[in-house]
Length: 143
Image 1 (cartoon, helix red, strand yellow):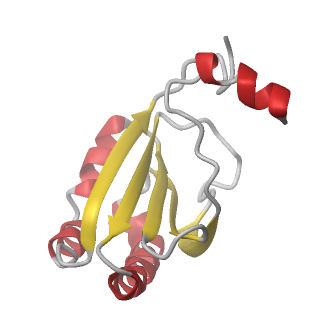
Image 2 (cartoon, helix red, strand yellow; image 1 turned 90 degrees about the horizontal axis):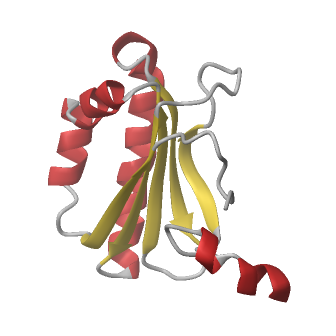
């Protein structure tokens, strides 16, 4: 592991995240065939307190159910949508999603339920950051 940790930083664009997470809700591969997506979205959320995170996780679990049950009808391009709670602290959460295309991602993030989630979670969220990833045909650790 020491050799890996010293060799990996020059090949990475995002830094090494060694936090551990547990699933709150969502699904991994809606099409079921592990197809390559057009874009991935990774959202890291820091809550204002442990109790705020508890409230946010409840909201994320509800949003996950909504996304999963309506995805076929409204968002067929949402191939993965998962929410997580960080196990290494009491304020971290994360959303990871895979989309068929950028257009599918844009349509999803503008859905009423998603917008309502963010607008209704302002008190719980201290900070957040989002990254999008595009396929490059080289893999995650290619140099």
